[in-house]
Length: 74
Image (cartoon, rainbow, N blue to C red; front, side, top):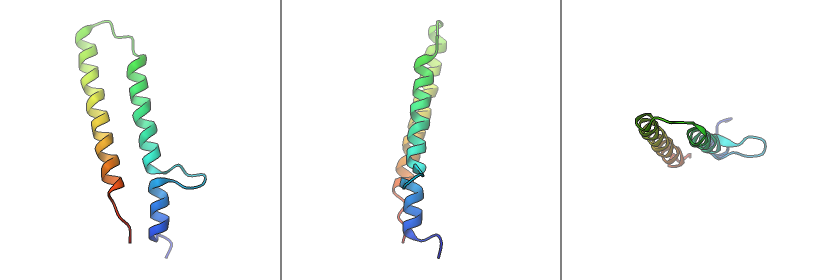
């Protein structure tokens, strides 16, 4: 069987040249946070709105990482 537990674990956590799903989600989260930090927001209401959007995105990524981490392969 090609898709055994070991293979699936490597897809999620990475192995060798592959960085895995969780590492990709970490990279996406860092990129979102960096992009927000790099924004030049002069309008306070726009800054507050973007902060809320970014916080929600990070929250959803964290939830996805938890969900993916909790999957067990047999």
